[in-house]
Length: 216
View 1: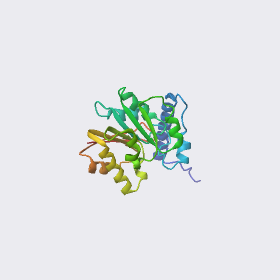
View 2 (view 1 turned 135 degrees about the vertical axis):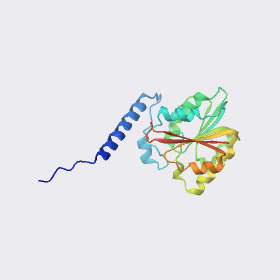
View 3 (view 1 turned 120 degrees about the vertical axis):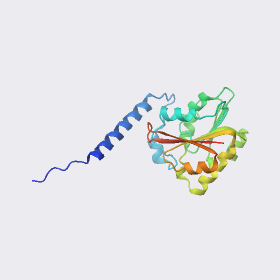
View 4 (view 1 turned 60 degrees about the vertical axis):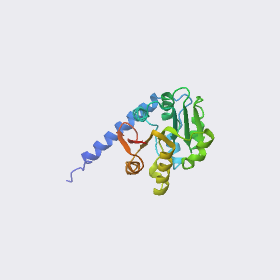
């Protein structure tokens, strides 16, 4: 009689861990206060190839990002804010006279961002590769911080390099570029453009993310 084959223990353990992470993130999403109703990340992920995440960032990832903002931050540019999960916490970190320019390509997310009633938030529907043209009307020649949720892995090598160069140029002395990414591919590029780079990792997110900070 042939013995019944069992699934390898390692595979079952991996599935159990992934299930636990998924359930954890679902609960975090449900606890969030989306005053105007959440955008479906999965729907956006399927419709728009530029959307990299299937779920909003958890509070643990957002807290790591906000903690890396420079002291006295007053001006922030955000790449790929999606429906504003990180954006709201960035606004909370700004003074009353601060400015946050949020650049987003997805029209559904732009509409969602427009529902955030805060005069400090400037929502821009456009591509971050056109950074100078997009920020010119706001007079943001130099900013304190640039925060990015866009997947740099989606760019080809040269456009990726060019965007990091444009980002570094836009920062004032002492400014910081903070990027949360699924992979570590951005690490060597940031070390090329910035004199100091901090690297953190947040497991409590779906998917888990690296948080890179380039110090100018």
